Image 1 (tube, helix red, strand yellow):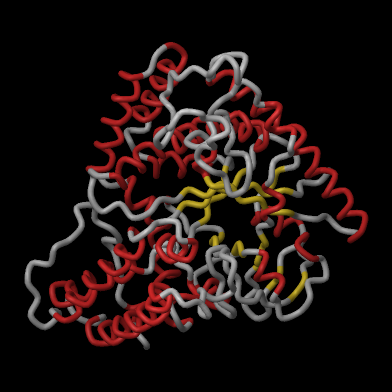
Image 2 (image 1 turned 90 degrees about the vertical axis):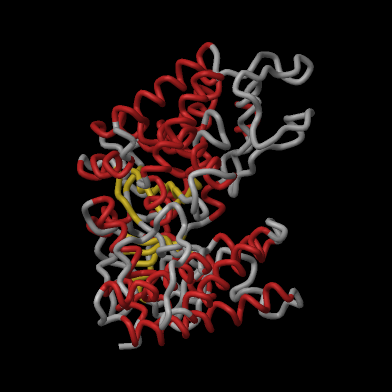
Length: 484
């Protein structure tokens, strides 16, 4: 069968502004448990025709390249080795050895994978923003421009595409094409609200008129693993993160009160599972899950090909934390899937299948509403709807004034732009919308916007502005913020 399936692994993390604290610790765990194992898996399969698309947010690339963060990852890996026992200790030692082999340089790791054809690299808006929340199309330009520039600086080449599943704004395709992007990934709602009914449905991208940007749909249903998965994972306690979106831990599998994750050497209850959890058993069980999952994808593709008379395509997006951090055996599943002959990448599929359906996607959000709870009565949501566009408009006025000045004179405006970009981070509004973060997300947005306003007020009499310990977007250009 022709290659019809693109698996996209999305690597992301909320902003990390200092090398200590909960946000940094979560990043260290993500690198140790998911990102480094992903690199090791893809390096092992790179010479065997593996095809995988890795979406890396600019925020994450900026964080893992910071020397203080790299030192923190090294300490975290040392602590994991010291705490682990038996096979888990050997696995922790292998992960630490890979980190030292790479010199702590994850940019280099993904550059080499892309060079060897093992992966196709893609990006997101600079701070993974939900673009419809920012305001007009002009305010999205800095997010796209900075994302492409940051990705190119880290990985040596522009990204092939951009993940816009957190929010696609109609006609933003011209902006993406202007910065050299060949494809974007959108939520199903964007296809449902397209300007014309897709002839091939979700089985081919929408080719946007005028710009030529190809919009692929990420179908959530396609990411669901089969019901047999739970039975196949009998005896594997850490592995319930099988659904899309996955969950960290499930009380049905964990009678005790657990924290962020169970201890690495934790044994199961004898009356619940037959044997203790082990990484080998977890990966073998997960690899077994991959075969029925792939068979289901083949069946879908054959039926679509027969009905449409052409090679179909389907894009499946997974959160990278699923493969290790949330699902202990997830690496076994991924290794089996990406080595399958069914796999392709969006850019490769576009080259091999030049005929597409033509229409513009509509407004697409990953949340339940096409807007951002505009009809709701939550004051935090209503406030956010007004605050972000107003701040973006003020930043445009600052950029109009300072973009052409010498570095010393434009630096205060650049600091204000960084604060605004952090306020636009897509994690915050989605957490507010779903009520998943209490006051944490609201406080984060208010804090970044308040800092933006202070910096904007002080551009004519700048002092020593307090900057985050982890520096972000050092090569920030004010020009995309400007109205000219």
